[in-house]
Every structure is written in C-alpha cells, then in structure tokens.
Length: 303
Ligand SMILES: Cc1cc2nc3c(=O)[nH]c(=O)nc-3n(C[C@H](O)[C@H](O)[C@H](O)COP(=O)(O)O)c2cc1C
Image (tube, rainbow, N blue to C red; front, side):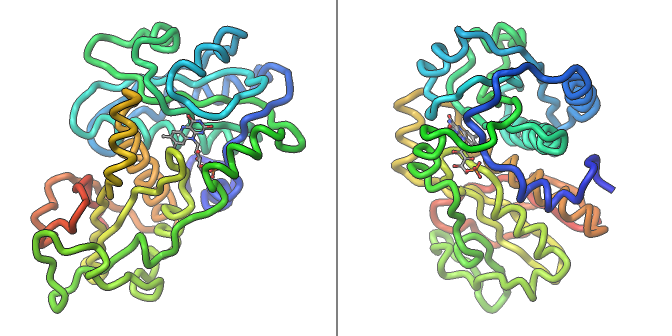
C-alpha cells in the first residue's frame, strides 16, 4: 500500500541513526533504487518540492561536517543525500517530510542512515546540490552499510542525545473538546491528554509520530486532535533555550524539519491503516487558540 517492501511501522521501528558504516560503497542496485525513489517522490505536503542528490563520500566531507554545526562523528559513510528547498513558509516542513521518506526507503534497502542538521547552505554540499540563492540546505543524511555493532563514539552520541528515549503519549498528544476550551496562553497541560482509545484507528499513526527521529532528540511535535472530526492539528513546541542555541550556531530552524518528519510518519501509517487524508495550513481557525509556547504548522483531516 505504501512504497515500501515491508509495513511502514516496521521500517519506522527498524530505523535508528547509524554513525559507523562498513568501508564499502553502495551496491549499484541500491544506488539506483534510491535514486529512482528520489526522483519519483519529490512533492511535500505543503506545496514545495525539495530537490535531492546522492553524492559519494570523500575524506574531506568528514572534516567539513565538523565545522557545520553537526554533532557526532560519522565513520566510513558510503555517501550523503543532500537536499535543497526554497526558503518559504512550509519549505522546511516539506524538506523534512520528503527526506524522511527517503530515509525509510534507504532503511527498506538494508542501509543505515543518520540525519545531520546544520548550516550547509554555504558548504560544498550546497555546491553538489547546486543550491540557488533562494534555497537553503538545512540537513543532509549519511548512508552506508551499517557496522555489525555500533562504534563507541556512536554509542556515546546516542547516550548524550538520549536517543533511545521518547516522550510519553500524554506529553505529546492532546484533545480539544468544547468543555475544555483553550484560551490564549493556556499551557498544553491544561488540555485533555488524547488516549489511544479516543484516537481509534489513528492511534498507530500517532505512535509512529512518537517514534520519529528529531534533532538532538528534542521531539518538538505536539498534536491537538478533534478525534470525532478526524482532524489532527500539528503544532511545534519551541523550547526557548534550544531555539537560542540554533540561532547562536546559525543552524537551520531544525524543529520545523522535525515537524515535517512527524507528518511523513503520520501520513504513511494512516495510509497503511486505510485512512487517506489531506494536509492544509488554513485550519488554524478550527482550533480555538494556540497553547502557550506553540506554533501552528499544519492540519491533517480524514478525506
Ligand atoms: C533534523 C535532524 C538533525 C539531526 N542532526 C544530527 C547531527 O547533526 N548529528 C548527529 O549525530 N545526529 C543528528 N540527528 C539524529 C538525532 O540525534 C536522532 O535522530 C535522535 O537522537 C533519535 O535517535 P534515533 O535516530 O537513533 O532514533 C539529527 C536528527 C534530525 C531529525
């Protein structure tokens, strides 16, 4: 039903970030299949079409990555997938959505990957994707055959980012009901937590959001649902300190990329459960008021 050889939930659970790879290039067939997928799946949910290219890794890439605000040490990658997107509202979310679908395809092909978010717009990566002046290069991902066991540095980075942890449902998913109206500046915690029972057939799709990767594992996605109307509002929760860090390091607005990844997981899992839907950005009217600290990103409504 989706574009993958196995159920998308399995792929999402199988994918974890790999930072050490076997020292060998991608097999020609894997390279070709990734390339074809890349060319066929370019459209994002919010109207943009980010462009991607697969480049073979060179020694210089490792040195350059360290100067671009990425963390973690990438050992022996076979290559990188580099993308560029127009710097417009919704652009970074489209980028995250399309790039994560590519990562799931790479996982499907038995490859290991690691998202690397930084400030690539003036790097050699931007040159490889021929980024134009109106485009940004917010992230790349490394790709290759994973080592049998994770390297020590990889394990240290995972430990530092708390990569195996995810926030519980009640921190992420909420229900807006007429008897619990939001007022401006209501904290998210004043909303009812959304239970798996109330989410019904979309519970699995939300679980796939919860398992998504995010920059520094900050998990900035929040969903406010009107489950009776099968309407799900995706919000971005900004941690002020993390936001300041991004600006100081001049990194792209990575939480917006994270939201795109969450939207990708949600849509793919919903589709697999037989639920089609549409994304829009003008449903903000449907939600009474934005909870404190959040930004509206997009709304999914069952078709
Ligand atoms: C937008 C984005 C940027 C990321 N940037 C980096 C990075 O620069 N270096 C790195 O080692 N990992 C990076 N990661 C990987 C996260 O640390 C990782 O996804 C998170 O800790 C969860 O772990 P998991 O991917 O193994 O599930 C990034 C992830 C995302 C989504």
